[in-house]
Length: 122
Image (tube, rainbow, N blue to C red; front, side, top):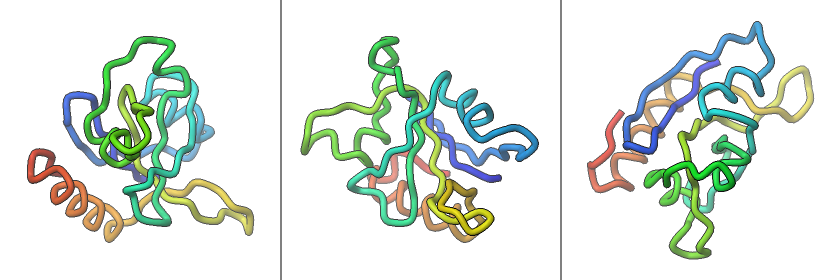
């Protein structure tokens, strides 16, 4: 399963998450702990963001791109720690989080570059 990882230092990369282990373990390692599935107000459907559920309690640094996508300026809640962008979809007929295909990666890469004024590029 492919996802886009964005660090707190605005480093962005495409990462392959093996499906041999459960999603919460693979993506949990990328965000540094328990995962929380969120739907940012500035990220188009069907895309979603996975964050560290305990990031604020752990004192993780703000993620500028995550804050922008989430809408922190509008409602005040920050996104902290590294994030992973994935997609809401279906697996075995059930709603689930799924990986990105090459077209998704391209689309999100362009979207993030535009939204960040060119400061963050895939």
